Length: 337
Image (cartoon, rainbow, N blue to C red; front, side):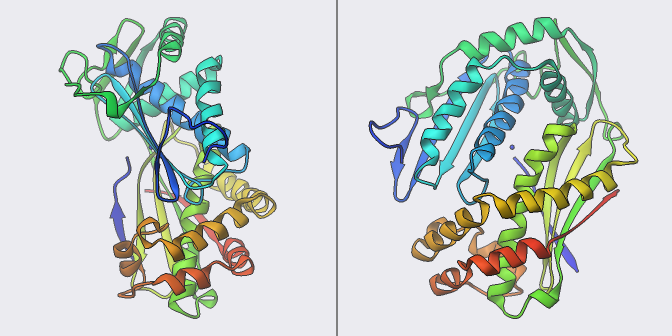
């Protein structure tokens, strides 16, 4: 089984929300919030924000891939949040999540985890943390207003304040960069070829597997300090494989067995949740709009060994029983590298 690697980045009823721009069959929200001259603070805020929003939505029956695509990224001293929402009920929930986060008293444990996640991302150890001061500054950033990216002319980065160059502020200090600081683990998902009888089965297996993996990662980040370093697909093989590479804050000999056990429980949670129904509706949407598919044509073509899926193929995938069968067939292996 060969793999190809890809790099990571992290209709409201009634009156229209100022957070959204309407496009065909989706709502798009491009927002930003600035931590003036302090990209390090914006970066920690970004990690806290993205995890809170995704967990908030998942707890209310909205899932990555079928209902929401969220990208949070810090450039310079500014946190940018780009969200696409496909479920008609999702915009209201997303508005609620944004408002709830900025009124939310962030737990100390979550702050420490976000600080460590940023360290893993940057390959730098945390040398000093004055938590009370950091939380006070985060609180001020929470109370600042979200702004529409369409209203911004430009915002330039400077070395003294950019997330890419600022690694020390009075309340938080990171050490020198080193790729040897943090252990690396792989979450390898697979569906055996016995469940694959056609290119449609193979495409559905890939779509279901990635959706499950990305949503499980939200649950993982609630309990472990990890950073998603990217993913990798198996290609031109009848079975389907998908890997997510994680950096960990510290060595954990028990993480493999614990994650496997937690994944088994998570699958049962998904099967009882709106996940299957939401994914079925998303596949129906894809059959009518090939510009907004769950996996792009090029990616699927590579996974399927040279096969393009058309509208009728997406429609055939939108089968509740087949979706549930694929979910139940997913196997997870966890190992260090």
